[in-house]
Image 1 (cartoon, rainbow, N blue to C red):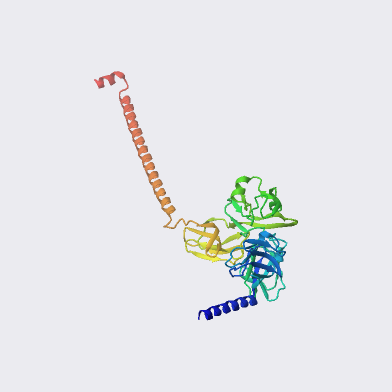
Image 2: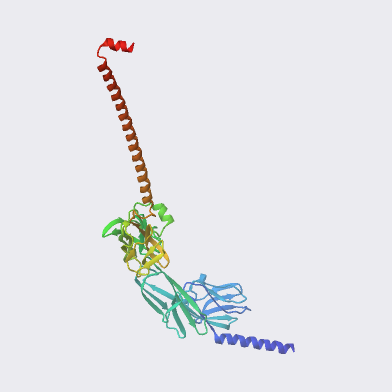
Length: 463
């Protein structure tokens, strides 16, 4: 029984070994990587790996030798005698071929190695709007299926991918499959040295300072730059007048008035500009970049938007129609101007992307009518300005406090006048009485002198 069992096992192992050798394996690898070619059988004596029938490496006991198919001794090794798999480091296109594992001069396993490379033109670092070509080598292998993807979207099913006008960074994945082989993904990271995406409109309020964002996808303030992108010149201008120019040192850029060391370390990719007294209108940012022999002048316009409204008015008669004007010099296509009345929450909005709005309002009975014009992005107010309409005062309106103040002052003045007149009349009466008494006394005295002309008689009379 034992002899039959051992015979069955030997037959099964022989069948499995022959089957593995007949089927073979296909290994797909990317250039520069390390691959392991499976033998998957423990050694019972000499171990030898061959490529195209020529020896690569051979172990005889503890002695290791390399054959003519070995590119160099450091690239090949058999790490375990339990599997005798062949490790090939830093593979290149020439390493592609058919490998055979032999133990005791018996072929155990055959493996086909396919090494692939993706070439990039002009380079993996582009300037904005440049064209990109990715090419797989080798490409004409029977049974090989190739597809290119970017951000999960299939872009091509051929070994070569061409994309024009590249603007943003991206990872391009080349997916390789082959019948009887493993799957391989080769990822190529493409960088675009340019501006980051940011709003092209900056809203200014009451001449307050504004910041024009100018942020890059690479460290523009450092030099030499790791991305090999250099700055040659740059400026910011308004109405064709240059306001400021970049200072360039060894390909790194900065604004002359800034503290370069601090700015370069804290914000290496930021060349934003602060305008202390901004003018409403379009500012042009311009920079010349260079990668090798390739140059690209990049320009970007940023509009400083100012909101203007009608002047506030006073003494406006009730029920008067007043046109309210609201204007802005630039606005996004998905934004709109809106008039909002604070007392009634009434709101009227214009068309999206339209920079002017006129609202005809009728002045109501409120003491003040305040209207707000704003730039709205959905329900969010970005910037706003107020207009106040003050009603004309009706003097005879009993609810008017000015009327009652005037009445009170008038009564006080009238009482004061009456008091003054009364005092004047009383004083005149006293003066007339005093003059009358004085006249009576004078008249009596004269009469006495007439009746007694001589002094003696007058004296005797008194006696």
